[in-house]
Length: 192
Image (cartoon, rainbow, N blue to C red; front, side):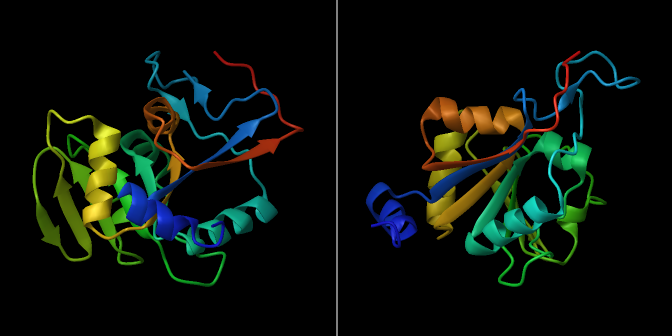
């Protein structure tokens, strides 16, 4: 069962096997809220470097073992991640981004040719080079609709790397199978 968990989840539940992944400080922080000069909005986050060279390689190994990797709009905007497994050999995961309003500029690294990218949104269906825009129903519950779409796209596993709002959406929906949490026991950050 353990060896074939992705296969069984995909075929029995008709959705991909979902792994939630985040790095946190000793006191459970994954980002800095309201950093200096970034406004006072709750959505204002600053990247918090929690991991190290070893954990970066480990995460890239995990990426190479899954069909896809998913982040939300804010993570893509603020961190500009490549979402590849460049520190580990193996197949590149499909990069997935939930960007309902298509706010992301195409200058971000997720739009480069390093891997296939699917942008889940509520506005359009199209393909532009290695980027596919996949429209989700506007009135649908996001997480179930996203997982149904991934099933239809034949993506059998997904590593959800954040941000916190997206991770919480999966937890609240109860639609996840495994959580991998990297905790830096030497780092404590006060919020606000």
